[in-house]
Image (cartoon, rainbow, N blue to C red; front, side, top):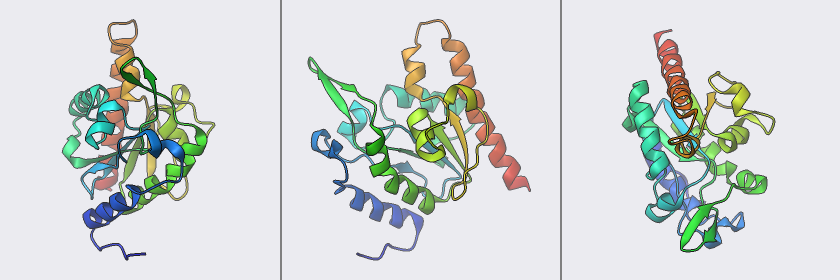
Length: 208
């Protein structure tokens, strides 16, 4: 195997090239491409979602669709510049089912999450963030185990040996589904609060 280059940006590019050829689960067969992470290779905050959506699958970049716009807004409210983060997903291929002319998201199976964990772990090891924000249950369970419940653990700092400290919270697509419905404002406020927790935690660590 080709030896990875030395600096984090070059190592991430090397990983991106490797992941583009991943065939460890069947999801690649119906996906347009592997959607690897994007952002600051030395970011102190890493954001991990579930999997690419339709627009992400077409463009090859994470969180560029409607859920990405909600994430951008919440990050801005929390005082975290997206340009200073690294954004990725637990699963790198879009899992979907046809509905007329649309491609609708399907939740990845555990075996698919497990197959992709190698890439996520290598991203974390390369970027070396101080805190990882887990966006939604799939991301949280991938890094914190299958028993984690977002409804009970969101907005707390979780620790697991071998990983940076982790903050589980909602996936932005959950807020998207609440648009115009009861609970939308409360859920958005909680989401921003969880991101603010990550920002405060990061500041406290840097001040020590």
